[in-house]
Amino acid sequence: MLSLSLSLPVSALQSFLKRALVALCGATLFVFAGASQASVVYQFKSANYTVAESPYTTSMHLEFQFTLPTALAPSTTTTEVFSLPGFSDFSWDDGLGVKVLVEHHFFELTTNAVGDVVGWDVDFSNDDFFASVDNIGNKTFTNVLMYANFSQAWRFDDKGGFTATHVDEVPEPGSLALTMAALASLGLTLRARRRS
Figure 1 (cartoon, rainbow, N blue to C red):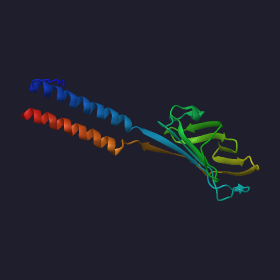
Figure 2: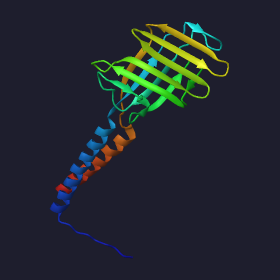
Figure 3: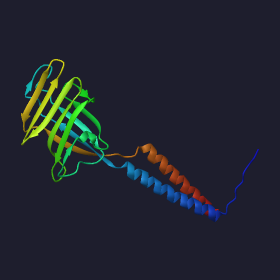
Figure 4: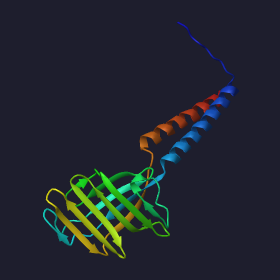
């Protein structure tokens, strides 16, 4: 059996362990600082439809949401939000169930000076359904259509709008515990070497 023995002076080992501990702490801070970036979930929710053809009812409404890695810029009009880097998690519900498939879309949002969505012109569809939400003056026109039987529902008034929720992505507890255990172990090793 071949064995390799490496003997280092205690001061060299201590110096190496100190540098390794500092590097590990720095890497941990870098990883967890990156993981704690906030994303923004934008959600639109209309009031209940005022006119509805079966299977839609006036107790139903349209809502949809999507996630962006950062908030939309203040005082801007953004066209084709679907094309923004990091756009994800789009889903919509017209009252007949949640849908995620979108084949055609036009998505224009306008923000005010503090970044709130105050204007919208949104159309999206798949092979079975179409939905449209337009902001006209101070009013919102919401319209949905089911292609199978051309049933539709709509509402036109000052109800409905966007909300934005900032979501912090926190590292999972297992990763944090494992990293802390490694740092503690390295620190204890350094301390034991110092005493001997």
